[in-house]
Length: 50
Image 1 (cartoon, rainbow, N blue to C red):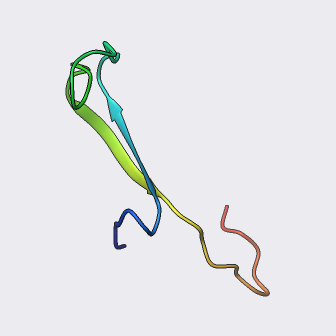
Image 2 (spheres, rainbow, N blue to C red; image 1 turned 90 degrees about the vertical axis):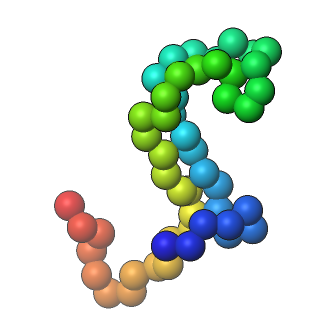
């Protein structure tokens, strides 16, 4: 998977809450999860995996 600003949207979950003042991460603690949200390709003739 390739990450780029043009190709999708990322999400990062931090351990604490954002203080809405500090940059860049709002003094919200360690990163505990991250991922990329992107468009998927349609699958023809197959049911989604369960």
